Picture 1 (cartoon, rainbow, N blue to C red):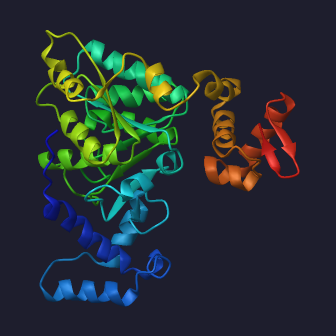
Picture 2 (picture 1 turned 180 degrees about the horizontal axis):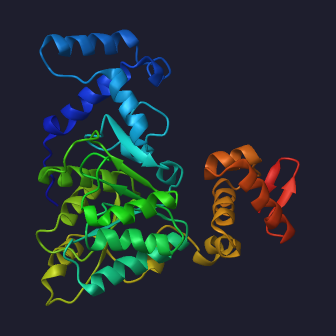
Length: 354
């Protein structure tokens, strides 16, 4: 499978300069904690300045991120997705809106991608797979594009799951704009929007290909749905191969051009799947066991608490559940009370458990 060439210098420079500026802001609190001496950042910052390279003012940039509700997580920091840390050409850092715990804490993250010009059948396949996998506690990653990407995000939300969208531009804007409402739904349901580009950066064409390595990089596997020969999803598939990720492909009618790239991937050794159950089987996930707690939760808050308890498999106190679910303490306490009354959760000396 042919490798993908990146504009590595172009890709990294903008973010690198921004990281330098942000790191120079004393309140950011990451320099000493993550063993990067302040003097090294200062030397780099002032060295670049002397060369005439325009750098943003650190304090202004930090304040701008705060106002936009965007967090910058450096590769040296806790919270940076572990899967992403080890890919070729990992970002110096990633910008985040929302809850990145969705991928940093869940080993079952699957990327679902395909053509923007998807058929009705292709979008239904993506939505159905995503919904079933989300119901089995998978986090779904995609690119918020038209077609298969949007269907994957929607299916995950329909299944009560958490989804993450990787963008090809700054997080202060959504492209395509018509998917802005979908982006809001992702954030409202504890998902996240991520990008390696600072706010204000436009989604130039080559950045979509660069972005695709992040979609595969944050996932354990990639599912390709409806990819023609020229689809950007094929670049994601090649990244997945370079990153040693699992690659699954849905086949389609041999007379349909939209599946020509998909069929080529199958011939090259990608795993053919015809139902979500085959992916669950590949990861030894028993759907009935993993969906039991979700179906017993009657509210979104109860479902989040039950998912958290399932994830850690050990008793947890209220503070731990607040940290994992991002819910207010009073909401957690109230939901726990109802779950205890219904016999779903029990309180022990060590905390709460299913």
